[in-house]
Amino acid sequence: MPTSTFREFVAHLDRTGELARVKAKVSPALEIAEIADRMSKSPAPHGHKELDRNPAAKLGGKALLFENIEGSDIPVAINTFGSYWRINQALGTDNLEALAERVQQLVKPEIPSTFFQKLKKLPDLIKMAGFPPRVTKTGICQQVVLEGDAADLTRLPIIQCWPLDGDLRSGQVFDEAAAQRAADTQTGTGRYITLAGIYTKNPNDGSRNVGMYRVQVHGPKLASMHWHMHHDGARHFRMYQKRGEPMPLAIVLGGESVLPYAATAPLPPGVEELLFAGFLNNHGIELVQCKTIDMQVPANAEIVIEGLVDPTGKLLEGPFGDHTGFYSLADWYPAFHVTAITHRRDPIYPTTIVGKPPMEDYFLGKATERIFLPLLKMLIPDIVDYSLPISGVFHNCAFVKIRKEYPFQARRVMHAIWGAGQMAFTKFIVVVDEHVNVHDEQDVMFHLYANCDPARDTEVVHGPVDILDHASPDLGAGSKMGFDATVKLPAEGKVRTWPKELAMDEKTKALVSKRWKEYGFE
Ligand SMILES: Cc1cc2nc3c(=O)[nH]c(=O)nc-3n(C[C@H](O)[C@H](O)[C@H](O)COP(=O)(O)O)c2cc1C
Ligand SMILES: [Mn+2]
Image (cartoon, rainbow, N blue to C red; front, top):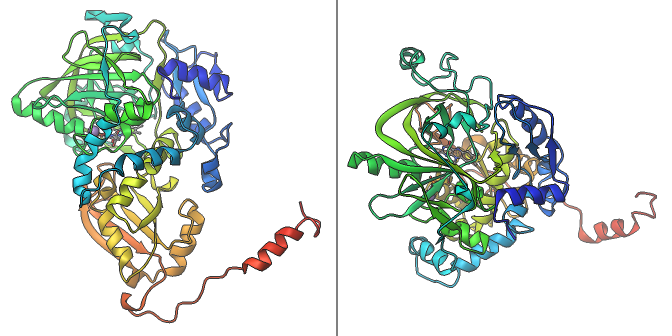
């Protein structure tokens, strides 16, 4: 079962040999980040069946609990979801495919004629699964309520991840002139809240959204909200801007162990993350009313920061060392004003660091890759399996396996992916045949190099790209490329006799396996 609090999850990791407690005093500025980065790139304690297919994913090291932090009496936990085994534990499963199967079951009973009808049904289906959030009167997240001067962000052990984070004089800025003007007056620090669920509400219909967006600290009661324009938090904010009203917003740290993942899941707009989290949790998420804003938050959270987003005021946010392995340039984002901080007695502060992969977020992404495969297949039935390789940081690359039946099928699949939700931002797509292991980068590259004639087998399109793509000529707009690495059929251009790929016959393989020891091998 998933755990109902973050603290229990950390205790579970401790009991199972997955946690390292660090008693030495450490700085929240850079030191924790460097330790976590090294840990992410070390072998993980528990193996996992998924590793058989994906040899590069044995990494993740241990989760870390820093008990002695300079400048704060709150301990910091990091890398808690950063391995296959740990993300599985958080979601209460021993393999992500079993979870995907549950999603599949959810989708199956309804047979409307088109995919879009099915997609529209998804909220109902998740609701029907029967785990809606439940509002309770009290919650541990409000054991301590801090208002006024006591509601001070700088008392939390918020970390700095990379050296140039928040440094407007570093040249890592979107608009040099604006940054120059702003550098003296701007307040951005290098401290970012990185593993929080951001809770907002649609002012028109009251529906809730939870997204994981980083939050930069600008002062004791001031922060900036970094939601990409394509994400639901930004969509809600535009609604408040239109009304000219401040937007109530809660930053939630901890809670049920499924929550951080649920905040990152690419659910279609209007499908509530809290319903999905209840489904993953097998139990509705308990919510309590916030103290100073009209918002409900998980009762079992460690720490909740309540506040209002100014419909007009903007702050220069960034730069920030991002999951692409590069800094994202400082740019203007909405200002958030803290109205209260509530927490449980003796809270643990959960955080993460992103950077050159693999890091903790790789495993959150892998959970999405597996859990959403049934939905992707529903949209594009040609797809047998897919993988988002470590080196592609999610949106840069997808390996897609199809059962090829007709000419140009790979191209059709590419175009379908470029039209599918958050998958649409995929910069490079490699389509391979059914016998290729998409979880093994080496196997995919082998077929890409061997099977592609670059002039004949590539497809270049223009469209929206990820906001974090720094190579595209414009922010959020650029080109994407597909490689058809499948065996070519006659109608796919000029194709000569295609040679057969080498493979030993089954009989000989069985014979050699049987006699292996006899030859003197282990
Ligand atoms: C560690 C981590 C940090 C993230 N930071 C951001 C961020 O700063 N801004 C953002 O828009 N999305 C960020 N994301 C991605 C979103 O959480 C994700 O796309 C989510 O599906 C958005 O939910 P929404 O569609 O409800 O907005 C982050 C994801 C992870 C795993
Ligand atoms: Mn959403």
